[in-house]
Image (cartoon, rainbow, N blue to C red):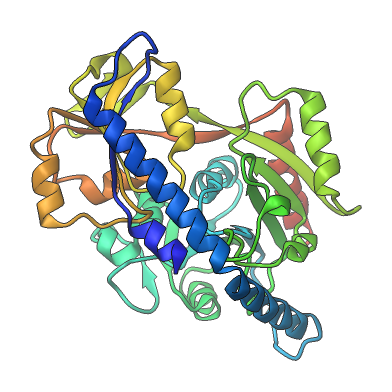
Length: 374
């Protein structure tokens, strides 16, 4: 319940990157409100601890049933790579899918299968040029928009989705987006993402924490990627994190950070970050906007921030208010829900960058996995 409340909340505050600028009194009130919301949510999470224990028990019983094969996991003839996490949102799954597509598309015929969260369609939907964000959901639509030659499909029933792809498209591999906890499908390669600021080993079950699956299930991963690291994270700090995660013999631990583009894209074309002045509004509807806020602060940008819940579909009233803004910066994921509805909106693209040669190591591991099927 607490998570639902937090997901629906709307926060409006003004961010001034430069410490030499004096914040207006209205901002102090907005920040105080934000603190009160945070404290209230934490209080609700704490009193919900018994619910977390019950939820955790159900999760562990379910996983035990799959481990003992009382519940069946289905295997498929197509090589399947699962990208997911143990928590709810905020680990960078979509940019990681895009990283894999970028690095593998010249060697394989790839299909991406997602649930299509908050889409308005039902059942299996294969992306076409006529598809809209309402048909696919924001993340699959973003991927298809970026890679129009890629096969992208959505289906809440992953078994049915894979069967449809195998019969209609026959891809060389299927990337399962956000399916780590969907044990009805047995993937051949599991890639587990965990955010640097909230490692799964430090998290608790919903609703007290953000875990939707047991920490023990990390043992199923072949690759564990710590995402959203500080770009200057030292090799010594990375090694300390590896030891904390305690990978098993078959597991590799890799590290990535987010790299934001300094050219923002809108219907009018591209603009540098310097184009955006004090009359700029930042609109986010993502699980964790903190890395983006840090980046904009480092760039010295002053802006008004309107924060919405993850995957938020904007109402007519909200769109009307946004159209009154001078200039809007948003994420690529939010842009696909705002494009054509709001003027003067630009998105800032983001990608995963790996430390040293770890990105190449990830792609190499996928090639090795695919050789087993050749």
